[in-house]
Length: 375
Image (cartoon, rainbow, N blue to C red; front, top):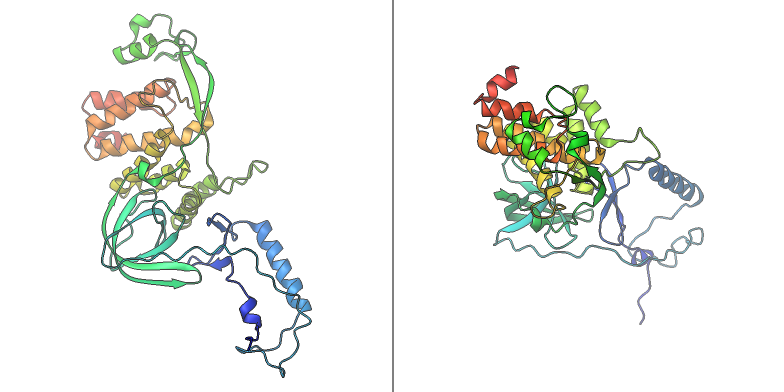
C-alpha cells in the first residue's frame, strides 16, 4: 500500500535560519553564510513577502498525517523544494583533538570553519575565556559534546592551543595592482620638508632608499564586506570607529568581527580590532595586527622591494597593521624587531605618513616605550 504523502514530507530544510547572535542567515549554493539582517533592503523584501503570504493563506492545524477529515489545503500554493543545499553533517571524533579556523569571536562563542571545507561550527569553550582567540588563527580543541540546533553545528570543547598559520587557511591572496613609478630624484622629501637635492646629506638608511633608484608603486585589493560603492556613507569600518568614539566598544568589536566572518581578508578589520586592544592588552593587539600583516603579505612575491605608498588608499589597511605591529613590539620590549618593522615601512612608503622615521630614531636612541607613550 502506497504511503500517503503528507504536507510535512514535502517541506525541505530551510536555507534561512537564525544563529545565537540574534541575526538571520541564508546558506547560498556554495555553502557560504550570508547575513540577511545586515542587508536592510533584502530584509524588507522578505518581511513584505511574509506579510503577503500570511494575509492570503490560513492553514488548518496539522498533525503528522493529514486525513480525510482535515481541512483542505487548496488555499495554499503547491510547495516544491528547490535543490537541497544542506551542509553535510561532519562526524566529530570526540576522542581526538580537532583543528579549526577562527572566523569571528563573540561574547560566549567562537565561529569557526573546518580546514579544507566550507563547514561552519560554533564552539563554546568549557570554563575558558575567549579573549586569547583571534580571527584568522587556528585553534586546537578537545571536543566534549557535539549537537545541532537550527542548522548550526555546535561543539562544547576545551581549548588546547592557538596558532597563527596563514597559509593553512587556504585563502585567495588579495589582488595587487601595478601603478606608476616612484623616482626619488623627483619625489623623495628630506627632513626639511623639501625635495632632496643633495643625497649626500641624507642619513645612511634614507640614502639607501634614494640609491635604490626608480621603483614601481603597487596597491592592494580592498576587501570591505557590506560596503556600497554607490553610497559613501556605507563604510562599516567608519561605523565601527564612530561607535568606538562614543564609547560603545562592544558594538564596534561586534561589527568588526562580522566583517571578518564574511571575509577574513578584510585587513582594516584586523587593524581596528588591534586598536581596540592596544591600550589594555598589547599581546592580543599584536596578534590582531600580525594576522592582518601576514594576510597582506600572501600577495607579495618573495623579496618584494617595490612600494606600497600611503597615497594609494587601499594600501592603508596593510600599513596600519604594520604600524600597530611595530608599536606593540616596542611596547612589549622587543626593540630589534620593532626597528625592523619601522624600517620596512619606510622602504614601502618613503613619504612616511605614519611617523615610522621618528619611531626608528627613538629606537636607535634606546628610548623605552614609556618615553614614547608619555610624549
